[in-house]
Length: 242
Ligand SMILES: Nc1nc2c(ncn2[C@@H]2O[C@H](COP(=O)(O)OP(=O)(O)OP(=O)(O)O)[C@@H](O)[C@H]2O)c(=O)[nH]1
Ligand SMILES: [Mg+2]
Image (cartoon, rainbow, N blue to C red; front, side):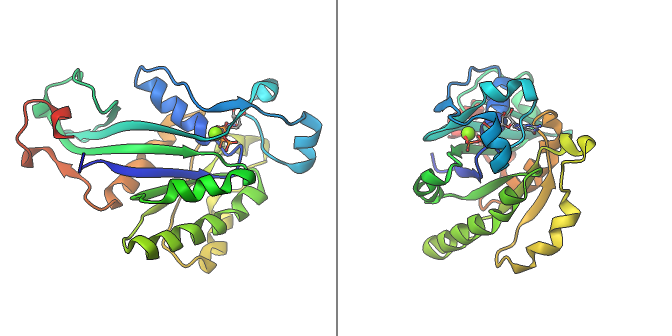
């Protein structure tokens, strides 16, 4: 178990955390069953509060919100010709020989509930984390402003655990740029001067999971103990390492 790193996903409600995890799980060929309930918010109210912008207006009423936490093990890996893949940790059937593998990144991804009434759970989730991904809804200034709060929590956890916790910020929903709703990374970068921990900003969208590939790779490489070099480990099957 010693190799697994805990990655916590924080972000305001509706920023796309669970959609991201669900997409990952489904791309691994597994079923996602999460701790979600239907949103108890009317369309009009959400528009006034500017809670979030939905993937598709017609999907708004079917939208859900997380009420506890979703945790998934994911083994990210790169191959010797620099391809990036991910599998469930326990997988034994890679679509290629293990000689073909290069770096391994076994993780536990923890998706937290973004609503403010669950903020205690965000702090619980942060305990013992090795890396944090903050999702912000790039169409919602309030969501972007909340990043500073999460950074304070992470800063406190770093002091507590006396370790460095890399932070990747995903300014999500860049697909809505074409509708003129998206605040890009450049326009908020300056605003990050006030944050006292080092963060990396990326623009992402759940409508194109490839937008997460490079951000994830850069982020995983910053986590202490990563990458694990396969050639340094003598094993029969990859999953036996963990
Ligand atoms: N346009 C667009 N919509 C998105 C994107 N990602 C998620 N959504 C939509 O945003 C809404 C909320 O997404 P969730 O993934 O449930 O948000 P969450 O961050 O898990 O929210 P909580 O569980 O309440 O903290 C859903 O209607 C999604 O369809 C994206 O990249 N672009
Ligand atoms: Mg959620």
